[in-house]
Length: 260
Image (cartoon, rainbow, N blue to C red; front, side, top):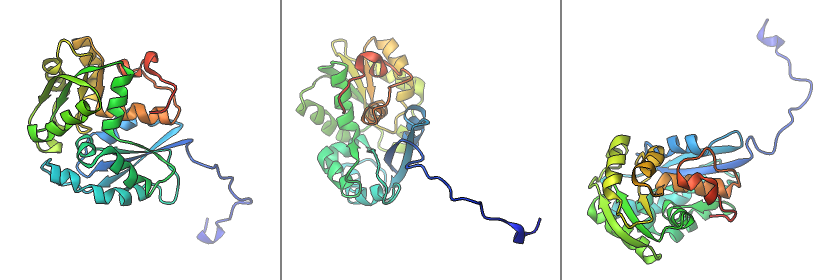
C-alpha cells in the first residue's frame, strides 16, 4: 500500500470515563528503589492504576534534607495526571512525614489535588497498628538515632507505648533499600519486645513488605511496615478487597469498613 491510501475510521471512538476505575498517585523520592515495586505487587490491578512521580531528595537522611522536600510536594502532585482527579495520593517517606508533619503534607498535596484523599506512611501505620489492636509496640528503623528519635516521639504522642526501639544506623536511603530480606527478618526478630502487641518496621525504602508474613511467623505477632500500611490504606480508600493475604493486616479480621 501507499501512505496516501491510509483511511480514517468510519466512526468516532467511544471513550470510557476512565481507563481504570480507581487512580492512586505516588509521590516518591528521587532515590526510591522500593515503593513502586511494592505498590505494583500489592495495589495495582485491573481496576486500580498506580501513577507515580518523583520528588527531589539529597542524601544523607537528616532532618534538614527531609524537610527540604516540603516545598516540592504541591508541584509533584500536580504532575500526576495533570488536570485529572485522583482517588488517593500517597507521599512515600515515613521519616519526612514525621519531620514535615502529616497535616502539612496533606495540605500541600491538596493544593494540587483537592478531591484526593492523602495518605502518609506515619498516619497509615498508626491506623494499621490500631486495626490489629496494638497498644504496646516495638519499632525497627533503618535510620540513625537522630532520625529515630522523632519517630519514637510521634508514636508516643499519639498514645502508643513503645517497649523496644531498634535502629540500624544507616543514613543513605539507597543503602536502606539494599538490606537483604533475610537480614530484615533477622533484625526484626531482635527488635521485637516480648511484651509488645505488634512490630512496626519503618521506612518505605526497606523491603520489609515482602517478608512481613515470614517475620510474623518468626515472632508470633502482627507486623506493620510502612509500605504494607500505605498499600492497605490506599486499597481501603478505593473500597477494594484486600487480597491476596499479606500477613495479619490483610486478613479478613482487619478489613475494616471505614476509611483510613
